[in-house]
Length: 297
Length: 225
Image 1 (cartoon, one colour):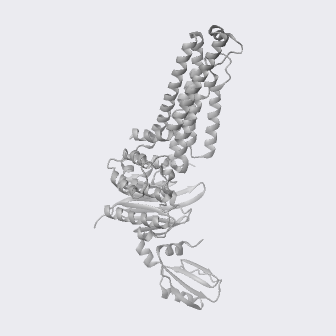
Image 2: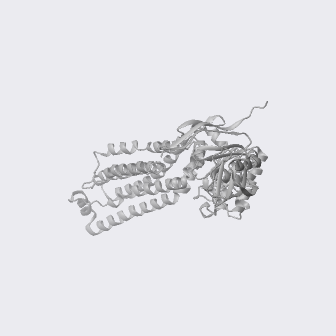
């Protein structure tokens, strides 16, 4: 049996900000060549995880390894293998398009300037244009171009969708997917915009406050996790059964999210003596499933 | 790699450096234009005697006092504010170099720029000073102005340390400590050769402050809050 190579391994990660628990005993494993998305609401611990992975934050306990090295002491050789996209596509805004390419090229042995310029030339911007004068979408292209030129083995993308309009987001996702799959790159990304994410990621890690809700292939999650809508006669029903992962309602119109199937849900309603009508299974995207799982609030 | 890092630092600091340097050069020329005017009016010998013996003394070079400090502030701010704004320093710390070495190289670059600026202004000042005054004047004046140049290094080190410090309270503490220490270098000058006795201590304080930025860099890297 072939042994799985994990590019990222986090073991029993626990972190607090002061006395506030972020998460406890979090375990993450990202296999080589996979694209894992860490999804969660604001404040769920996404950026904390990215900061620990990049060595910008020391966890209270536990350990994260990238290519077998503790992220708190990454060697320059390992850092060279990691492409990092900072939240909001932040780059050195005081540089222009030409200067930034010249600057980074000195740090990476296998720098592929063509990959950068190919992307930049599509933007219809001049080499002397400063990054500070660019739109968020253009900055995203510059940041992406720099990562492609670096040609890293692992890409860590922190909330890459932030500030991108739908067109640029789709472009970014499709380009990234194509590039990573063609070259066998491993990706670990976070996003709080789940729309389109199903097109990009292979595996999903969904975090809520202090805990992991789901970890595994996206397909497994979207196949197993289901949503049903139905109307009840009353609007004050609560479900304590473990079948009900999340139930929300507006007046007597209920949304019921579960890992069970239609029969089990109907049985539960009948067991509680609830008369239902307009019972329908929802056709859910990853975003629908995420909201169903984590709740709207 | 270090040259490429210096390239980034140069892009950030070049206008601040050149601006401060031009102001410094203009101030030196202004000081000596004023000196030459006085010498023309009073006679060179009379003016030199008044510089030596008047009470309170004629501190014709007092305008130079804050020029090295201004240079350090301009370079420090232009170098570190763009890094800490939007947490851009993370891009720098992600570069394939040892993090402490990265911070040390950044600080070294800033100190080198200050040295270049200080060197130009100092040499220019000394050249004009020695052209116009005898050694009885120039020697004690040099002792006095050297401390102002040394103060610029202390100021830069504290700006760097404060900017990179992740905790707001500590930033305030560092800023206050820095200001108190800096005030030692800018006491009232009531004789030529002021700071003659304290100069070695002031130089040591500035020297000791050089590695402080590494401490802030270490705390930043650990994610201290």
